[in-house]
Length: 180
Image 1 (cartoon, rainbow, N blue to C red):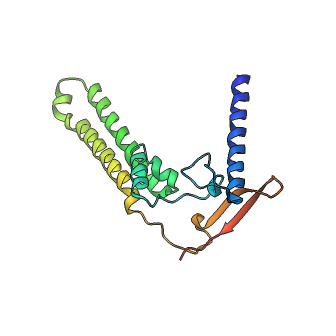
Image 2 (cartoon, helix red, strand yellow):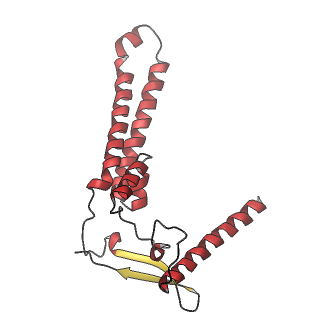
Image 3 (tube, rainbow, N blue to C red):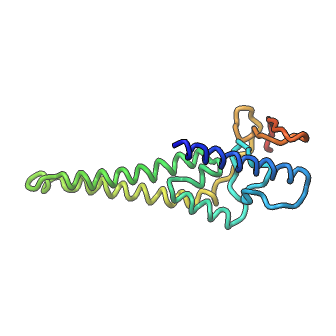
């Protein structure tokens, strides 16, 4: 157990140092490849949600990630769609499993003859909800436009980040950006 903890701490330190180094290199405008090239070096420790990518390929990638319980929306910072997609897909899976289990538990005879349609309806509704969640999740990156606001209580307007200083330390940054 101790070996795993030591390895985990070493990996975290290496990733953190590489990210800070990438930020310092980007700040000095020296061309380099960042540790996480899909995001700019200035966004390494940025706690502000990312937006959906602008390119069609990036939107397709986020759409495919949304097939897995809304993962693309969660990564992009679109937590409203993330919640909806997760609930639709997860709820659809739960309803389908419930319908199958309910039908399997039914005993033969009059119960099965009269009420077979209830678990089948629950299962079909679950499949429909899951399918609708897949469709909504895949199209979300193409249809969602971030609203532009200047409200103080909108978390998209705030940026909290860790940035390197000139003497090699790490400092915090808090910024407010109004979107018009």
